[in-house]
Length: 140
Image (tube, rainbow, N blue to C red; front, side):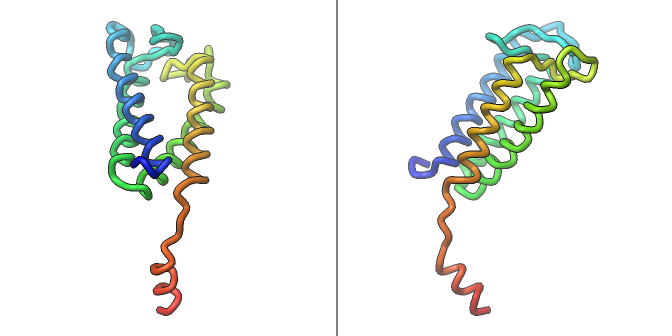
């Protein structure tokens, strides 16, 4: 893991998102599952659905980071693309009834920053090609 930026980022992000998901439940007691406005966890708005999503994303990232470089690279790229979409769409959902994960401006900034980092690492790092596999595939 020390030599793979993808595994390191996936593991760190996974652990952080799991922690945020768990901490979110400490502040969302009595909040509707799909509430469009939620209490703040530091500066980020959360509701129970938002917490569940953080737990799921954290678990996937952590598992991929601990499994292998290809898994971490794939998950980083996928989660980064999803966060890019959420960050952009989230800009239009603020103060609407469609905001079922209680996004606020700080959430959108965090999602866009996470997207840049995850996509950047996922698409640019750990791209070594196994020549032995490539040569064998070319002979077949």
